[in-house]
Length: 629
Image (tube, rainbow, N blue to C red; front, side):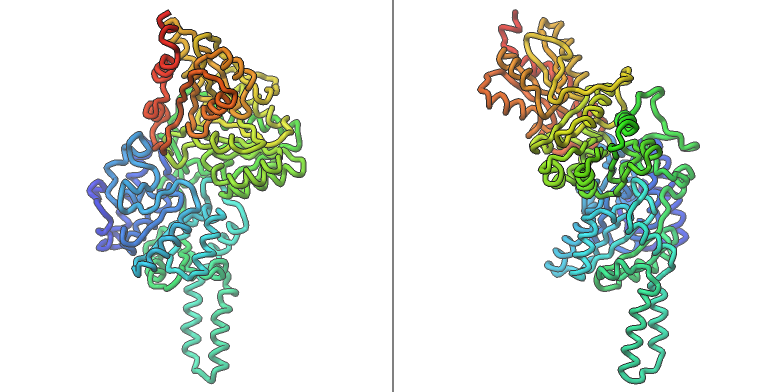
């Protein structure tokens, strides 16, 4: 079938199972070929081909509301809703988003990127539907990994209590972004192996109805026997106790099984769980056999072998530099433990876990729990390192304030993917943490200029005993510089002059330092002497250096790959105002809007975080007579 001709999914209503099976093969071939060039979330989408086709055949989008939790498994949905022709732009600048996007299609009714939100949104939509006296179906699709998130469990509790008509599709592939953990995962495993509970329950009900009614007592006994069946068979009991009707387990790659159970669920009144078993990566051998889920999100690859296409001799990834330093610290200090919310692979903690299996705690998709767990460890004298993406730390903000900072506990936050992250787009840009962390009392916030300084900051954080400390580091690879063998502590709050200058000063940190250095070199050719300062401690700032700069009335340009509102530049402005300094000052950073997907250089260009713009801003704040001289 020509997938490029698909405009909307109603054509599926007339297709036979044989035709759907052929279409499934076409869909998988399309994904494997297209994502080999663009990269993307391959494994998750290969696993939901039949499920997505079946959902669109049984339900009627957009009248019926389909919500994809996390959203990285929505590629088949995008093809069925007319977007196959845009897949060569997937996750590229101004191209097709890798997640559901409301302005892309009327069929995308919920935007995601973070997990465990679909059930709460579905409940809100169900309430609105009932208040408006409408009758459409609401169908959230959530993975077994996302179901471990506390927000998902809160929503299950509410939906079940209110008895709303919501059909929850539980896509159980036994693997989310990382190995699933927890008691709920174990319960799902027992459900998978125990057969189809509802079919057994219905068979029992049919038998009971054939027993001649001999008085009320026998009828009551029959009902009690039917109810006890669910306790005897076990699968679905967790959900049934929450008020859901449970269907499954269902083979997510068998259309007969899918249609039988989805149609049954559609006719059922009240909340329903359809437990679907799928194979992540199905149809592509390298992804099918991936037991470490390296095919969850991939860059370009060779179709024949599955070999990833990467630059030769690339420097080590930032996450690897930080985790390897932590491993060195753990060998020396038995108090060092690592905590992560389902990011063992993303934060490169595999080797730490191999060497210290009893000191690595993957809590699943549970950022709030991970933060307070770390606080609990710190109260007992341990040195917890919480490896967490900047975008996910936002979900534990209350715990950062109340459970860590308020008690002034020695928790180290490894803020991974800090700054712009590129292809994953606005849901994953790590640009808010500077603003929301620097406002928290007792918090230290730092970012290294390179890998060597990164390892020294980890060592500094482990040695630090006066409260919480956050080390930011970006996505991608380091600069490839030589690493020191001996680790040293860096004085908290100290900055470093990288290039001296007398006409103006650029205060910056992390990823924007090379840009500032290059701009300063170019300005020197125009006769302007511009100092570049590595403001590696965002909080506390180097106040002695700031006093020196401002007393000498040096014009200041702050540059940050983070939001301007409440960010590092704001803190310099606050210092300037507090001490009544009159220095000229400009700020560059991320503007007050959400930044969509694209390569980091493209996004820098879009927001004006460029070498040319640095030069323009420096010239704006240096007095004209000084420039003429």
